[in-house]
Length: 331
Length: 281
Image 1 (tube, rainbow over the protein chains, first blue to last red):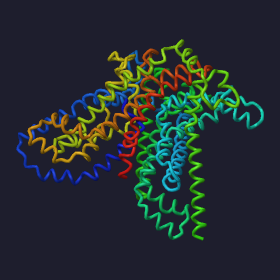
Image 2: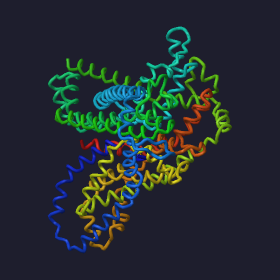
Image 3: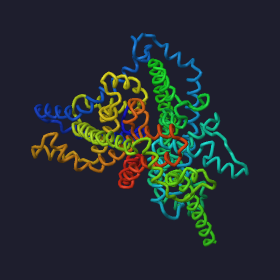
Image 4: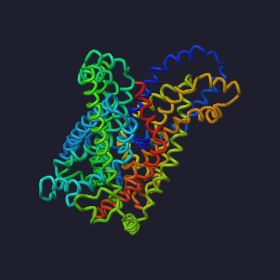
């Protein structure tokens, strides 16, 4: 909630796990040298609590409390004004029966699947090309694909709207030029095209980020493996599929879970692209948008809270699934 | 034979380089066109073929934006939010990270660290509705406080700083500082902070950019248009004045410039922050 950027969260999780593994022996050494006087201990403990106190005071008040309260809200019927009423799991079943919610699940899965596959695939290709085959300008390639990430999702959606406007938009001009007659196709109102447009936005913003992750992974692969393979006359495709891909597996797994966590919670891009409407017939209403609409347009706070727990369940499910897959494939 | 192979390889590499370069142009094109359109008149924007070089109508476009709203106001609003939040977040995170990294034997440390870590898995949407209600009770709706004060405590920032301090500061340093009679806080401010400056910079850059681009939270807590941060103000403008493409593009460009400047100055920290975890994997 209001944290730095959700974009970045899984990366730090990975770093943290690495850190625990690397630092664990260090902790033991300290334990062994623990013949300190108790006065010193008390002072040290006090110093510890003092240093983490500012963080936990704010964190408990504004992050932990809302989550606990959200659990209560999910079990209540409340519009924010009248007396809240305990309704058990009614909100959870009400959400499931709502066709718009069902559509939002489907839309979210569609956007998650295609944006993840295409972004990760493209970034992987680009990273391998930049790492192994490009003749020069590596720094340029590292930086240039990152630029779209600096553009807020909401602003990127504004730009996309301008370029895809039905009347005089640049895309329709190009289509018109290609087919020899003017095109006035309304991309943004199309039930079919609006989802690919959201995917396009995600690809544009995120490819550079994944590429940097892959480049970092590629650089940790020893060069002489490639030299040896090339000496033996192994083809480019075989080098990629037999050497690069397996050795890149940790980066790949990390990249996919990042894209997945972002995809499940997608809000800004489809919201701004459809001006908050979710497209024709809710064709690109995501779970996040459904939550927003129930809470802040219909003031059905209980239903909104229930939906947020469904999103949480999806995050947990995807994280567990990801863990079991990476374990089985033996990272 | 060898020569022939080498030649083929060279040609392949050349083709890859050219293809990648074209691809990179495709990625930059939307941004470039934004800049071009911002300097063109409305009729020029809708010409075919579309303009590919800058025009001379930027000031006219600016005047039209100014007639609707003060163009620098959202930028100032975003700065008012981003600067105190970033300073607070970096300091609070570094202090807590230092506590976790140094006092490894304090009772409850393991639990607190684990709990902080676990909260990283909580999607922000989980807290969105109760947070909104809470801000209402505090009377903080329609102010910048909800975007600054709660955001200072970032579980993510703490874990980052803990990891960073743990891997850059040798434990002997704490002992040396203690021998010299430095208390915990003095050690933090005069010994630890100067050493971890690169880590602070990386966290700060990411915080500023994340704040600049944040959309959902400001959308929920800010109702008053005069308080809108950059993405909100631009979204509103593009909805109400969607027919005036050059004005929309110019205001968008203005909102992007600060972030791109920051990136130009600190791209090294930006990328360092990005790969700090991935390199080890």
